[in-house]
Length: 106
Image (cartoon, rainbow, N blue to C red; front, side, top):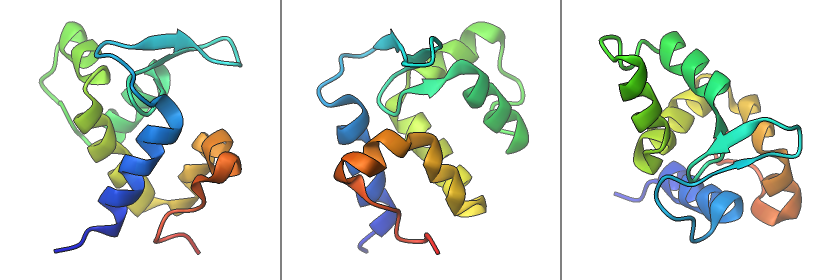
C-alpha cells in the first residue's frame, strides 16, 4: 500500500537533515537546539508527546533518547500533521526550499 504521508515525511527528513548521523543536534537559527532527522526542538517534542499521550511512563532520559530517534520523530510528525495540517509550517524553511506541502494540506 502506497503511503503518501510516509513518502512526504521521508522527503522532509532529506530537506531537514540529509545524511545526519545518529544523535545529531545543532543550534537552529532562533538559537534553540534542534535534534535528529526532523530537527525538532525539545520543547516541541515534549509538548507533542504529552498532547498525544505517547511515552506516558517514560523517564526524562528515555524522552531524550526518543528525541534522537528519527523513526519516532516521523511517527510523531505524522500525528501532528493528521491532527492539524497547518503544523507543517514549523518546517517552513524546507517548504520554501522546495519540499512543498503535505498530501493532506488544504
